[in-house]
Length: 455
Image (cartoon, rainbow, N blue to C red):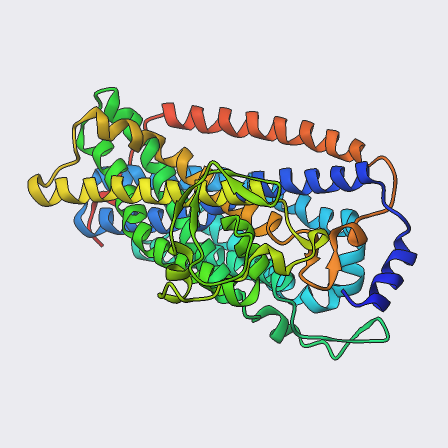
């Protein structure tokens, strides 16, 4: 951060107590951690919904249409609660971080404005899709769901591009501590936008697929092996499983991007202390006294991943002042958790693919079905861990290299009160959402008679 801008913001905001900074960060973490689950489902489930409706209409298949009916109700509930949690986040950006929005709001306002437009389009068409199901022709109704899917993906892109800007700030100049020559488009399409948006959107489809499939995996474990439940498992798991190797490749691309643009974050992810070639890849372990302890090290592994050669020089934490380093142990362990879950889900996906290739059926072994039932939770944990790496790995910067988090926080006292209120709100919202979804799960949806005819 430039000294002039830092001084201006600090003078405007006043000193922020450590407890209030912790409260603001905890509140933001809780809000983001809760919202990201619902947001992922909101991005991926419309695609599953449209596919099942299309297959049902194409072949007059009642099982596919029953799945579409049930998943449509789920999408409606998730959209409603996602709107609530998203609104809370939008208020928190201004209330908790006035130093960020006051100085850089004009730079990153564009993706938030576009996200708002996408949200309203999604709201309009999801209303048409849900309430005109029996009033439109089957083909028109199916087409009405396409904007819902597109708007959901667009919303994810716009929001993540704003976060990408926080990692790679572009589209402005600083003159005398003031932001000038603002280019919102350059800010939105910053160098971090491609790896972050692709990684997040693919993750959203994976979470939707594995989470939906896990519900039907539980039913299969309980002996419900009729075609309806098999399709309910097979369709979303196939989508998520097909995307898993893609996500691993995208994750490798994102990690190599960090080597050039955020080397301190990459060093924290791997607990790499010293800069140089033959950088090891550390699995597990904790960072104590400026070194990784109890880790399984793969010699030259990180150099090979970054530059495909053991001679590749990888920057370590020794190039970054201690005050500018993120907390290494949580960043490293969360990164390992995300990667480990990704390879476990890849193994499950390969198991299903092999079984389908051999016998054209889902594996019946409980050794497969138990982890398949847990795959939804595992996918969510992987996404949460990935966001911890993204956000915590950028610390102590809220805008990388420009604005420290401590300088952006609201200086008002007693921010803990807001955190406590938020805990109550999200507790009520969580209980209500789970209760409604469980009621819907127990109800057996029946396809409308006219839907059984091929259009």
